Image (cartoon, rainbow, N blue to C red; front, side, top):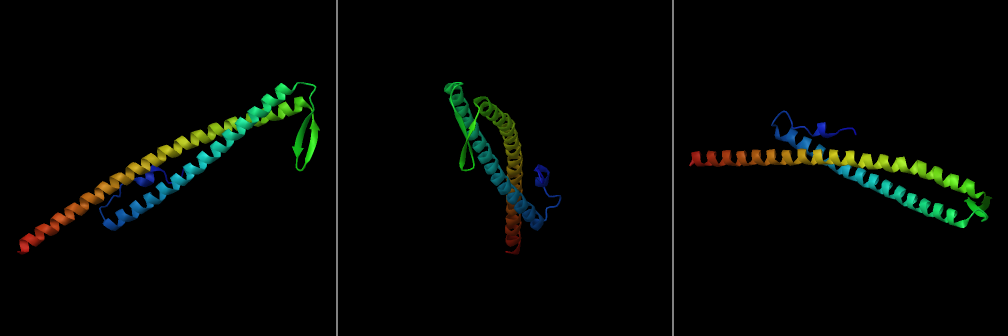
Length: 148
């Protein structure tokens, strides 16, 4: 995916403005990855549901027996279909869905890895910004004490 973990690299300078811009960019990427993962999960779930439904259709076709009449819904019309043809159609659909489910599962894992890397980068940036803020606060306190 574009803009992966490499976009979450630490800034080369300790310029606070540059750090905030980098942080915001990484927050935006983190949120985008979350949305993409939700969509991937929903797509995978939809295909798994279809696979389950197709499995039930296949079982019904097998239980129906060879002498049973099978109809296929084509638009608003029921069309008579040979049972062997219906089974073949079901098998082709399963053959299409299985690799798609595996592809989506692999995509989800890759998205999770990128999300984790971005989260770690954000945490590191937060710690660095907090340390810089504490140093600045200590520096200001020292200046105030010297002025007294």
